[in-house]
Length: 87
View 1 (tube, rainbow, N blue to C red):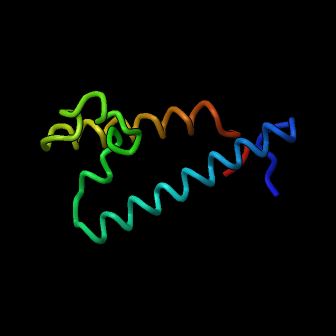
View 2 (cartoon, rainbow, N blue to C red):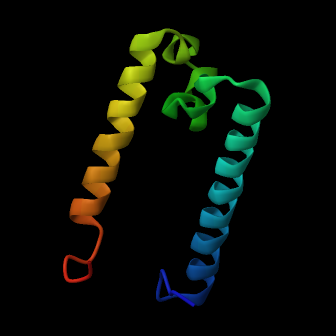
């Protein structure tokens, strides 16, 4: 199995968080299928920022900003936190 961290306990914690995130994404997809509500895929909704700032998930502009932030975060993680030697 892929080792994320050197420390066994920290590795288990990281895998637990990733597994929980995976289940969260599945729940979002099921919610979208059942309700046909695209707001489920809004990044601010996924990280629950809408609980503090409710207007972050309203309107088409919020959806565009959410998508742009997701793409930027992916590029940052890909560029700085992945092994450049692997495909």
